[in-house]
Structure formats: C-alpha cells, structure tokens
Amino acid sequence: MGVLPSQKVAALYEQFKTIDLSFNKAIIEVTGIIMQQISIKCGGDSFPCVIYSSSFQGARIATTAKILPRLQENNNAVNLKFCFKKPDANPLTFFVSARSIGYAPYGNQNDMSIFNLQFTQQPPDDLIEIIGRVLETTANASARSNEHITITENTQRRLNLSSKDISVFIQGVPRRCILRALSFSSAKIVMMGISKFLVKKEVVLKVEFMEPTEGFLIKGIFSSAEAVNGRKDLLALTVQFDEAEIPFAYKMRINDYITMNRAGDRTEQANPVVQKSSFNAQQSPSTAQITASQG
Image 1 (tube, rainbow, N blue to C red):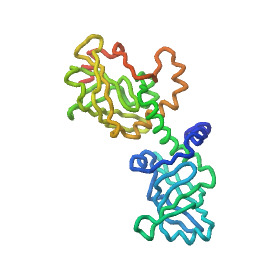
Image 2 (tube, rainbow, N blue to C red):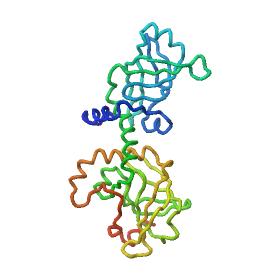
Image 3 (cartoon, helix red, strand yellow):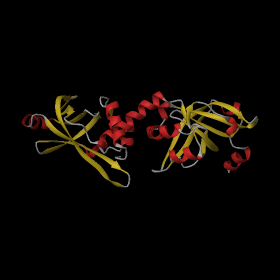
Image 4 (tube, rainbow, N blue to C red):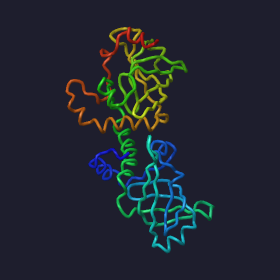
C-alpha cells in the first residue's frame, strides 16, 4: 500500500471512481481490511460499524440507530474510519470525511440502520490504491483472461515466482512438472505422462510466490495436451482453472505483473512474454529435466 506512483493512483481514481466494491470474504482477505476497527465518528462520539461496500465517492455501512440524534445535530457530517493490515508494520488507519445522505432500518432490528455515506472530498491515495487494485484486477481478469505470461528467467523474477519447478496433484497424488505459462484463468505445464490418461482429469496446481511469501492451490482440469518434440512420454498440458476456485489473491499477482510490466514487455522484441494463448512445445525441457524434477 502506498507504493503506486501518483499518476497510477490518479488513473485508478478516474477509471473506477463510481464503482462500488463489496467487502465479501475474499475481498476482506485480499485488502486486509480490519472490520473490527471500522467506525464512524459524529459530533465527537465514535460508533462501531460494519462496512458493506465502498467506492471512491461514498460507502454503505450499518451502525447503531443511536447515531441519529448526533447526525441531526451535526448536519449529517461524519468521519468514516478505515483500518487495513500492513505486512510487517502497524495497521494503516485513516479517516474520510463524509455526509449521511439516507438511511433505512436494518431488517427487523430497530436498534440498527443502514446508512449511505457520500464522501465530501477525494479519499486518501491509500484507499484509492487498495480498492483500485481490486477493481482493476476484476476488470482485467475478465478482459484479458486468455493472455498468458510465458515463464522465463526474467518473468519469473518480475512475478516473484518462487520456482518454475512446481507440483500438480492428480487424484491427490503430487507430480512434479515444469511451469511454462500462467494467465488469470489457466496454466501451461510440461510433465511426463500419456495424454489419454490425463486429459479431462481434475487436478490441483500448486504455485508459490515471494515478496510476500504466498502459495496457492488452484483447482482445474487438464483441458488439452500435445506431445513435446514428438516424444509420447512428455506432454505439454493446459490446466484450465475452475473459475469459482481461483483465489483472488492469485489474480492480483497476475494483474500486478501485467499492469506494472506492460511497457517493459513491449520492448522485448524477440520473445514477448505476454501473448495470446499459445504454446510452443519445442521450447519444453528435455525428458531428463522432467525425470530429475520427479525426484
């Protein structure tokens, strides 16, 4: 957080300023929002609240109806407190000035109400970065789902990928393989095997990243296979991920690479690392390499 250049923050604000982000379980996890620390301040009093969604222009919260007299006294002016986890640091806390522009009872609970807040100024860059990265990831995962990042020494480093020697679990049994490409929705690997026994099999791919250390188990199927260099025992396989099972944090890793390295990728004339879905089996490792990785 707080690491994006100001031009990027401004671009995120303009692109997504009217779009609400709902704080479901997955979004709470990837943003690091600390729900127990969210509160709303009005007229010198602070009230705990639950935040349901936020954009760059406002938020939707639930809090005690006891705030209503304070709102009337203070012309509906409030300050909404946000709090987010930061790796290896104290939580990030800040307030956003807002006005209550409407409320409704919360179900049958007379002591709780849902409030719509409108921010009275542009929120801090930290909030724009946190929410903007999630919204950008969602947009790119939809629009660029079939673009693959070919794994080279350079892209491995820029992805912070721990290793291209990874594991795929077939019926719960781990098999070593070589990672050749990643996208939002699939991966391409090379491993030993026979096509007719692998295609359409359900699998789980294990991919690990660094900075910060993070590992993902992603469910999918082997959707296609082709021989490598005419060798029947060595296959180039595509793992099509189960969309409902793709961790959002994994999508953010792919999005960060694509958005932060797009300009650099255009300068790599020989072998572009971001390309439409394709796979050159001739670039695959030898049988000896795969056999060594099985151990």
